[in-house]
Length: 145
Image (cartoon, rainbow, N blue to C red; front, side, top):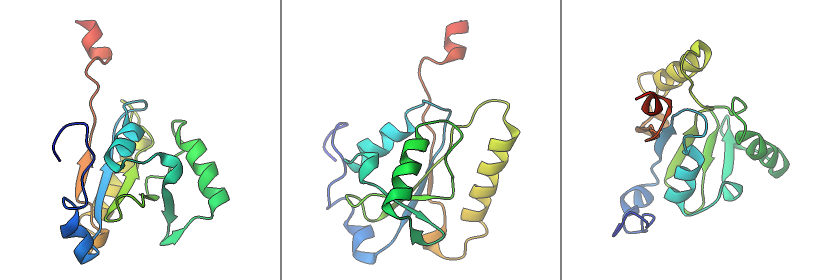
C-alpha cells in the first residue's frame, strides 16, 4: 500500500490468493470502537456486500440481511460467523459483539473462540492469524485525567 488511505492492492494479496489460503482475523473491541469501519476500510466494501458463513455454509440472503442489521446493535453478533468480502477473497473476518469491562460472559466467549481457532485447530485455514484490537484515543479513562 502506498498510503494510510488506500486499501491493499491485488499484488499485496497475491501470496494468499495464489495458494487459496485464508487469513483469519478477529476484530475485537468495545462497542462503537470502530470495528465495522475497520472492516469496511480494509476491504474497500460495505457490510451489505459481505457474505456471512456459519458452520461452513453461506447464509441465505434474507438471513444475512437480518444479521447485518442486528450486527449494528451490541450483543447480537455471533463471533463464530465468518464474514467474507468478495473484494478480499483470502480474508475471513470474525467480529466480536463488543467486549466491555466487567463482562465475564463476553470474555469467556472470546477466550473459547481464540482457543478453538489457535491450539485446537489443526488446519492452517481454520486457525486464527491475527487479532485486531482498536483502541479509542479519547475514551472514558482519558477524560478522568
